Length: 360
Image 1 (cartoon, helix red, strand yellow):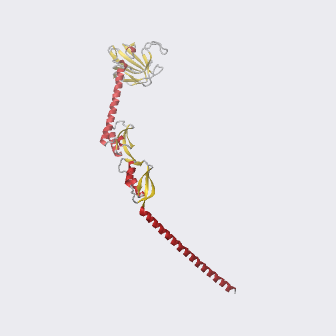
Image 2: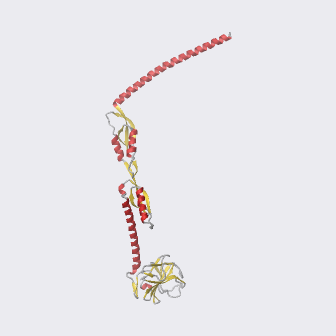
Image 3: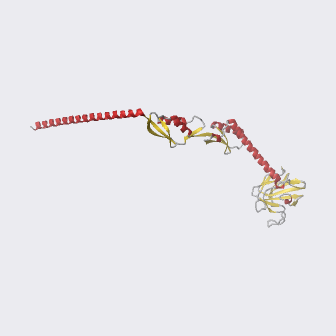
């Protein structure tokens, strides 16, 4: 009996489940059909609206450049590609990069079909607002730009050629990249012209140096004595050193017992000492009698000049010198209290006041 009841209950439960499923499926199907119809109607309505809109309007992008509306374009991606590939890219080898002064912005819009887009006009405006930076190569001489060429290969060729020609020279040549937005600022030349330009600069520099040295020598030879002063046929045309006379001829000071036999001219250590007149070196070594490093030059006719307390001696005994030649350097050797030149003029071994002929 119990078993029959259980079977009856199970049968009823199964029936109820089937009924519920049927009702649910029916309801879902009903609502789905209604929803499908609604969606279909909405899609149809949207298509009708879009069709009506498209009959009258067309989709475009409004372009704004430098804050100003400049027109409309159809395809934003294609337009940006043209800017990147045709405006901001160059096949010229001397172009380093191209930049835009402003970045265009885009806004999607619908406009009347009768209105035109103006892609090319906008591209022209953008192209006109670019700045091109060029890269050239400067050939430097002692760190200074001297001439310009278009490529690194040309620059290396020029430098190699000049270095080969100037093997024993201390010329410092180099290459540096130069960037400019104005090509007129850099007058680039061909390889041959660049070589000529550098060589001309080197030659001019050499001539200038030679001229300066010649002028300096001439100044030393003429100095402030003009045509010089003559003693027994010897023309003292050059001051041995430029400086202040710190002790005059005939003076007596604590460092010496007797009257001063010459004059002392104070000058920095190492200052060049020049021969006062033409002659022949008769003494060029250290003197233990108080002169320290001493140079004596015989000028003939019994006339001699003494140059004492030198730090260095540049000449040798027996060497012939001309007025203005470098013979020694100022120092403080021997009996001395500071850097200076002790200068004497002697005639037949008698001291003569040098200020009568030099340092007047």
